[in-house]
Length: 384
Image 1 (cartoon, one colour):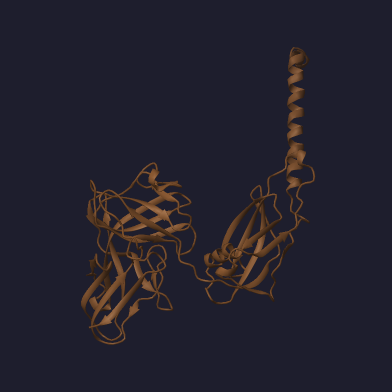
Image 2 (tube, helix red, strand yellow):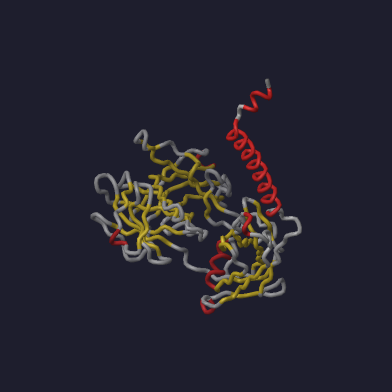
């Protein structure tokens, strides 16, 4: 009976069976070859540079266009037969102030490259982006990584000393439209800055004019003079070489004082109406309202009575679009100081910083100035 069933498969049935077995065998072989080809055992990348541990470089506007850092590395040679399904290998440049490369920046160099050269300006921007201090010698660590099929292989690490110079922060200028015009000088509350040179911009803008409940404006980059306007909705951007051809952004609800954030990589914009308060030991950690002055672009509290050693921070209330009302003041968006006394963001999700301490008892005027863009926020505590 078993013979009878096989016999009646016919020639086509047998051919299908043989082809299926051959296909499975071929796939298994290809899989084995593929896995063998991406094996990193005995593969390595050797990195060399024109700068070494005992060498330093001082960056300046004078050498900004010169090639100052030259990196070369060996090809790890993962594949010898590209006909068997070569995987594209991309190379990544890592820069950090620590040899652990835990908090630095990574830059995609492309595929099939074994060298990279950085001008003074490009290197300076990258050093500032990883937190190097301008006008000071910083030890910098660099390496190359190859990435293939989700796996990565790192080269040896090279270190050198570099002294970057300070640059004006990249900025997006707020260009007024629809009935109001921003001033020619953008140091008075109409700019967003990228404090980390990472294409993420932030600032606090007083949109005093409203058109149908919103402020119309565009953004102009100080980096390459590109314009940014209306994208696909109120929270997306479109980039253009000619700002006049772009549609207006519509910031709403306005008039309002807004916290504005822009991500040029994602081409997105967000904005939050906001008010500031003071909270500390002087008011039993309650919320003392501050008043915004459109002429100075500062939030101010006058007649504040501090005892010696009192401390406080700046907290905020934000507008709730769903309920069309102000939320209770909270610490989600708040500002304290760092170890050097510089004003820093201390809210969600950072929850860092130190409260501001007042040494002497007395009556004070306290002001908060967020008009010069992220990285340039400041405050004053002045005894009356």
